[in-house]
Length: 348
Image (cartoon, rainbow, N blue to C red):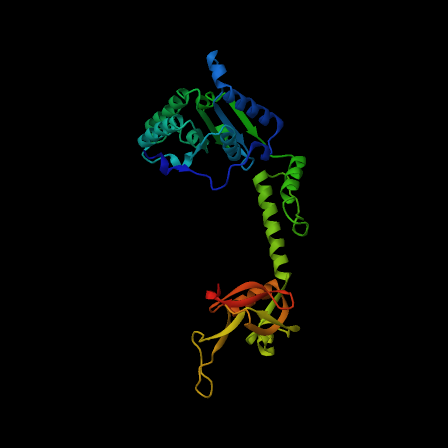
């Protein structure tokens, strides 16, 4: 079966219907759908079919895909997702066969079959093209699969362009849910919900309206990311230096200034010597050795050094300076100060 190559598994965990900002009419109809499937046996006894063919249409980014997965979550059903524009093969005869297999798999797995970009099937029903006969057969095959859908199966299709879908297909859906752009009030509620998850110092954004929920989320995340980066750049960090970082020349070169420092001690470490890559020799023809901190088994071992304060942006510079055979770890000095210290990679 070839359908596994064209189905899509969402990378994101499905959210609940309560987490999606749906208007009252859409939510009411979805609640009715869920109740019908919950009491499907009682309805079947009276030979009353459930509404199991749903078309979600409207503006992109307003929650159609999220709704399909939330319905599957609410019904405890797996969701088989297919993007129709990527599913249709240039060999249309194979596509018809794959569609039939896909419907059969959804039925046998008691799953929700979610077909995204459903308008693509409407676009290809252009009978003026060379393959018009194959296209007619493909659309007719899809109509047949929809008509023969088992009562306990659920088909959800989504489109941003309902106006181009053939009326013969549209008639097959008992429920059509329209997703419109959210109002300013609804967007404000959405902004408030998301921003409440962030600290006060990075949750101020310029709000935009007349856009979808997905677009609003992008707007927020872009601004919040910029605030986080700026905050991290200016955040203060304490670094314990025991080697060249103590020298005035190094500080002037890498930070453009001399750093105010205090003497302190790190307990439980010792200094080892290593030969840096591409190391040079001094005037006495001796190789310049670099000292590096390593975790010691002896509690009496200690390293004398200094503690200085730098910004987050300068800390990144320091990471690059200390990159060779080093990693940065958080430790506590003898005076009780939490500091960053650069140690050998194999220290832990």
